[in-house]
Length: 228
Image (cartoon, rainbow, N blue to C red; front, top):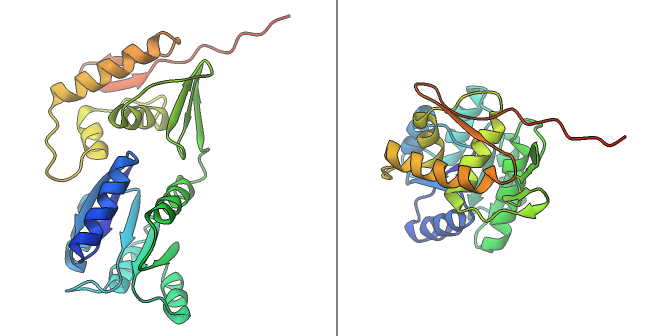
């Protein structure tokens, strides 16, 4: 999943980026409201962490523009304005949650997990494909009931494939969902990650198909066997 942080405090933004990256998210950062508007127009994100006191354009104005476009992107307001009136106003403008500075990173991460789960458009938090189960909240995978040792990048690839079961995902689409600005991931790198993921899943009967010109998809899972 990909997150945008709109925050003018470089130290705070850096700390949040580090924590969320460690949790397996791709995280981009902008420092003012105009940059936030531009990023939201040209990129696809799963969550916006939004400071209210942004330069050039306030966070409230960014939020208003976002909701005026009928966007349902989950928004977590992160601000030093901790009064009840400020909280109510932010929520009334379309924010999904509100956390005041200073805060504990553990609490922020918990709220991020809750909001990304809520933003899945009613999709289940557990994704299943044959003998494979993926927990989108805990970001863990089980194959035939046993944990699968996957890197953060491999987990993200698996999540994308599972959320698009029955459809092909191109390399360009994978790069858009996996990579932050400034990261250069070649098509060869995608192939390497996919090869590692494929190798770890095939022992449990889960296969990833590659079709030239179309991309990757999960092979149709065999129906569960029943005993008479």
